Every structure is written in C-alpha cells, then in structure tokens.
Length: 478
Image (spheres, rainbow, N blue to C red):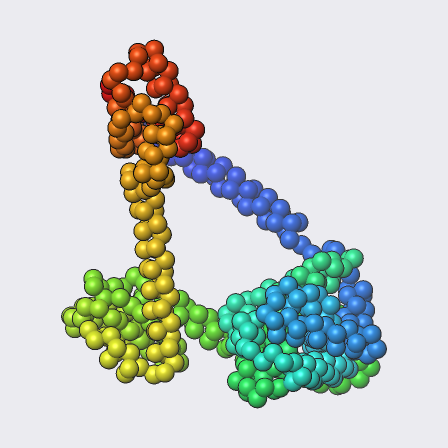
C-alpha cells in the first residue's frame, strides 16, 4: 500500500514538473516574440532609398562646400572663446558625416567606386576644414588654450563609445522609411567630428604640434567607428552586394572590401581595448588614492597616475607617514587587479618649503595653486564665522544703538527720570532662546502717581518707536 502511494506521489510530481516546464517554455516564446516585434527593423527598412541618400550625402561641391567652410568658422570661434553652445550650433550644420557613412556602406556592399568617391570627398572635406580653421586661428588675436580646445586633444573611452553608438543610431535612422532628421542632428552633435579638425587648425596655426596630432587622432577614431558601425548594420540588415558582370571581378572586389574591413576593424578593436584598460586603470587609481592613501596628520596635496609607466605618485605634507603604513598601502594596491604591476612613489616631509623645492616646476606650481585655493577657502570660512559671531555678540552688547545718546534723549523728553540702566535679558521656553532688551528707569519720588503712570506709558511707547522693537522690558523704580 505504501509503495502504491509513493508511485502516485511520484507521478504527480513529474506531472507538475512537466506542466511548469511547458508554462516556462510558453513564457519564453512569448517574451522572444515580444522583443522580436519590438526591436525588429528589417520590415521597416528601405534599402533603395537608404542607398540613394548615402550616395547623395557623399557628394561635396557647391552648397556643401560653403556650408562646411562657414560651419568651420563658427566652430573655430566657439572653441576660441570656449563657448559650448556655439560649437554645438556649428556641428548642426556640418556636412562631414556623409562621406564617412559612405565608406562604411560601400565596404559592406563591395562597391569600390563608391568607396573611392567617399575617400576622395572625405579627404577634400578634411583638408578644407583644417585649412579654414588654420586661417582663422592664424589671424585671430586670441591665442589662449581654452578648455574647449584642450578637451579635443586626446581620445578617451567615452569618445569611442559615443562614436560606436552614435554611428549605430545614425545608420539605423537613415535606413528607416522616412529618415529621422532629429536623430541625424543628434548624432552630429554627439560624435563631434568638427571640433577636432578645428583644433588641428589651432595647433598648426600656433605651432602646437601636440594639439594637432592629438586632435587628428581623435577625429580618426570617431570617423573609423562611425564607418565601422555603418558596415555592421548594413551587413546585419542584408543590404544587397553590388553585382558585377565579371564573376572574377566580383570576387576580387569582395576580397578587397573584406580586407579593408579587417584592416579597419583590427586596429579599432585594439584601440578600444587599450583605451578601456587605461580608463579602468585611472578610475581604480583615483579610488585607491581616495580610500587607501590616508593618514592622520598628513594631507595629500597632489596625486598623479601614469598609465604608460604604471606609476602612482602622491605628495604629502604634515606628519611623517611610517614606512609600515606605506607598505600596507602597497600591499592593498597589489590586491587591485588593474594596479597590480604599478609602483607607488610617496613624496613626504615635515619641511613643506623644502619638499616643494625638490619638485618639478609644473608639479610645484600645481601644488602651490592647490594650497592657495585651500587657504582661501579656510580664510573665507573663518571670515564668515567671525561675522556671524560678531552679529550674535551685537545682540548681547546692545550695539544696535548708542546707550549714551539714548539716555540723553530720554532725559530731555522726560525730565522726571533720575537714572536709567540697560541690559539684555536672555530667556528660554526650552525650545528656543530669546534676547529681550531690558531698561531699568528710576523716577522722581515726588511725582504724583497718576502723572507717573502716564509718563511711564509714554516712555515705553517712545522707546519701542525709537528702537524699532516690538518687545522690550521696562522696570520702573520710584
């Protein structure tokens, strides 16, 4: 009997499991179907119109040439005066994106003629942009390195990610039936192709080759990843390959296109990985400085990290940090994967001027600037505290008025006053403190009671009006 019950229970459990498995499968199929309908763009893709639009945007002559020149001037002015709004406005009217998309699309569909035309037009656009920016910065009286210019002199992982996702958004928008213009304008702003070219012009005009090289590097990264994104989306959407009458020529073209794609992709992937590692390294270094490099009585005045040499340097003033503590820092640094191979260099000493004199001019100026800023903040905070304390003291000292002048006025107006005293009475209801000005007035003993009460009331009203106070206390003595 027990065996029969066990078999029945076992069969019931297996049946429940099968039902749950079937329900889970149905839910999975529904979810897959939902996301497929939500994210599918193949059915709404207009391949012919997309190809026509890409071919049209590649062309660079007439109106496009003048638009590019004017937009470069606008962007250069914005960079020169460090105006983000002006730079954004220039990017909205720039036609630079067309040939870059043309490169990616032509490689994807094995169209060598379009690829050649895209490269030629892109080269002309880049050359004209750099020339225009160089002319502007050469004649411009403002030669300062603005923050907007400096920000375009080196690539970061952020630039790569923006170029990738911006390029994907751009080509997806272009392939939709009825192009989404707002997306294209947004991508033009996000990927920021024009400001780096303007920065190249600034570097050439002022002989700052580091600026020029860094900016053209940044532009190249943006252009490569936009073209690469176009290539990937075109392949995924199944854009038809260009057909050639000669099958041998078609195979040769396909091989050339594939080779170009590989040549572009491999360095791009390597660059992306390197920039990602550098970003992670710098982020972990900052985290290490903030959380680990701490010691009571010592203050960090400068902390630097160098990814290429794997070096972390920190400059301390104040109490001497024991070697044991520094070894503990090094041990914790070794536990962080990104910082394992790094070297920690600690500069410290009790003699601050002597420490600063040993540093390089650049580091020294940075430290002095930090110290100046910190001292200014300390002084400003002290001034505010002193002002607050003086205000509070004034309430207790009666600095709102001159007691000497007030007593003389009171004697002139009320000749029966023989003596007057003043103090501040501090009271509390155990929820807040209050300060009440209190006057003690001694009157002539020979004055009649009725007249005295009248004089006292007038005196109180006069004091409230004279001092502009609603609450005062007057103790009358006869």
